[in-house]
Length: 149
Length: 149
DNA sequence: TCGCAATTGATAATGATTATCAATGATAGC
DNA sequence: GCTATCATTGATAATCATTATCAATTGCGA
Image 1 (cartoon, chains in turn blue, brown, purple, cyan):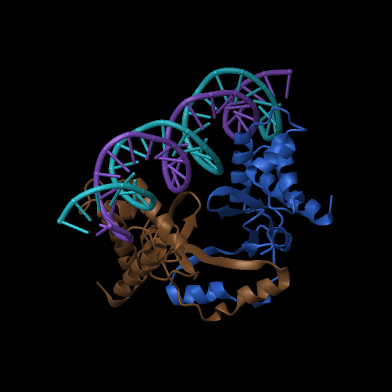
Image 2 (spheres, chains in turn purple, green, cyan, blue):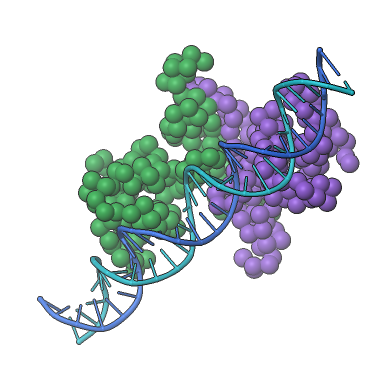
């Protein structure tokens, strides 16, 4: 377990404690999976990964807890047209993603030119901006090789 | 009907002709609604708006044609977590949106600092980038007034 | 240790979207 | 203009992710 994973896991547990809600084994395990996963897992990914340790766990439990963790501000959802949402518990704040439309892999690009778009949009529109999403869609190097594009 | 709407409508009809597919009245009407709508309508919005002129039109027809128009490159989809997708037939290329999380209104901000992020991401990741989305979520001026936030 | 509210697992319900299919209609070629 | 053909329509069922419901269980503070 990496240092980041430990930090993120602890942060989630702390927020949970603050909230007064219960520290269920399933809940803590879901938090750990989110904190450890670099691949932006879906609910089903998390569900399948947890079945080893919790043979009787329900997908509903995973959904409910992901919702909770999101509402605690400890994970972000990447909602995708036509497929299940993916979740990021390692950077629980808005940040850009690159999605491979062939294999579904998602990674976080470094993007120097992000600037302060939020401020600009706020100034121009009068909206009170709460969050944003900046996602790129394309074909990853591995899939480009495969399909010869 | 504005000049832009006329231009967009004509562009869609031209692409349709090129494709060899048929110019159905329903299809052309859906194109016109997309070309005229500034409010980023949902399939259901378009469906309800067309019921006057086409009393027996089916939602499936609207879905199918929106899909087609999208695949012709003449509209873009704004897919939203938890609610129906919205469509933009006036700017059929990726561009930023602001979504009001209270009332659902969507508008297109002017954003000077967009730069060439796509090129930067391509260079950094090796992906072949096909499209992107940049969407801001917040509360619009009207809703801020209402809820006193 | 007890009691209660929160949580779980199972399952049903929802809502958007997609697929299926028989009947209809647009259009190219004559 | 007429016709054959193939796309398209409307109706409806199916799908899929997500959410709601509810009885049984369990964490946790008093």
